[in-house]
Length: 308
Image (cartoon, rainbow, N blue to C red; front, side, top):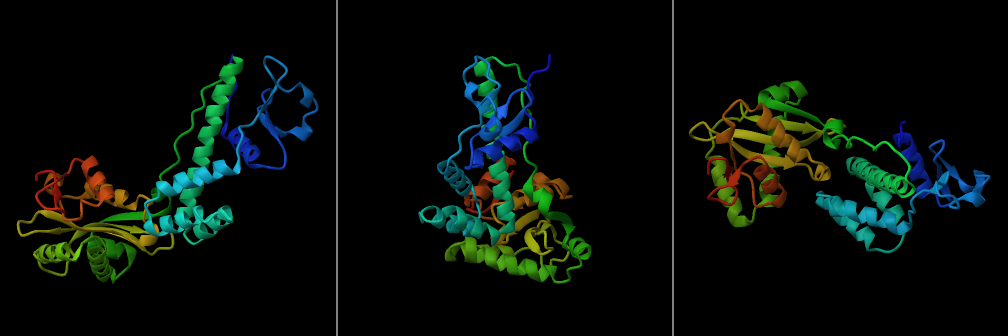
């Protein structure tokens, strides 16, 4: 005999009941639907039976919502949005409204927040359901829901190939100029003055030319604008050198850098073990991403390879 089944529809109903402050809500275990207490005729029987028909949905207070926002901000890599949201969380007044107001300015971060919230509350409901069924000895089918799909792949287009190929595909004749601009911004953002001079010297020693035949991966935002780029040039020996990995500030923290790295490692026609990364491996998230993929920091602060 099949046990109780917790469907996605039921989970959504439970979450609605948790967040609704106008009434108390209960899960009807016979019909597996959520009902407000005002609609339950035998409300007086609640909890009086060994195996009740109705169980109250998990408690959810303002402090729980606040803690959820703190967790989200704590794992958010985008420095611009993170600082704004952290300021709001300590302001003490109108926190929930201000939080939503800031997210409206960053639609992609807002989508990530709502997915994070939905997934987190779904986990609360699943854990509560399992504990409740075990408490009353009720047979149930183990809830099994897939993780939320990758936000980046859902909302951003990622292309790889030579710059000429990417430029032709996107119809952006000024792509190389855009890349040079990103290169200059990255140097100013990530390198102290002394290291920046060394970085520029190493960059200038790459194979000469317009760079139109360089390889890379390019990310476009939902509105079609450039969101990020990873560029592979070649050194004097003809080996591939990643000397640019840049994501626009408003799109940071969404996983775009990770997707660009994986896209290039999947499609780069050269020897992947000989690929060098002249990017600041000392930056925590970049170093972690590269180490996860088998690369090691070599003799310089920002040179990473599999053969140091």
